[in-house]
Length: 288
Image (tube, rainbow, N blue to C red; front, side, top):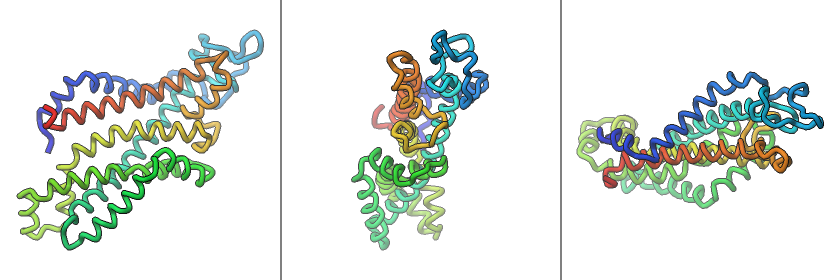
């Protein structure tokens, strides 16, 4: 179970405080940014987006961060990209965490018992999955899928990233299952799925939350890499990775086209990783 002092330790963690502020900023920006921008991220503004030479303008009163090569508002595309990146990251992380937790609990619960074969088979599959570098695996599957939609992207990211989660949850489950409350539940004839749901899951929730928080950052990187390599969501979708890829052609004359999406990717990864570190230190009593 959670230590009631964990919240206090989390609040005192400087990195966690900064990371939380960054995450809150990103969520607020994703929610309110498109409303504040006042521009459609997919419509070119030839009237206000050109400079005296007929080229895309830099920051102006009409376009706070300037426009891209197709005269589309950069601020609006960043805000819509935040919505897309965070939505994909959260849902894919939830899918990955659910699969990893389920596999890990089943594997750990059956380890060393009559159903040892189940644990062995699941862990061999996990070993195979962990043997592939994650980003390489995601890029290979993304390229094989061809035309990518939000649904396929969620499935690709969510179903290729649960292996590490399963390994950690299995280890934690093996520790928990020897508790008196688990033995008592078995003696009373409680069904296995109820034991997993009511007793095992609450006791592995701490590590699961920490892993999930760090996984959000991993998902943002993966989605950005896929978009940057043009195997993610197709244009004109506003995605940080695709904006980075499109902006690099004009980085010498319009550095904001690269700096803006790159900064948001960096802040997202930094924020969620710091929150994850804070949660890890707060929930792990051995560190205090």
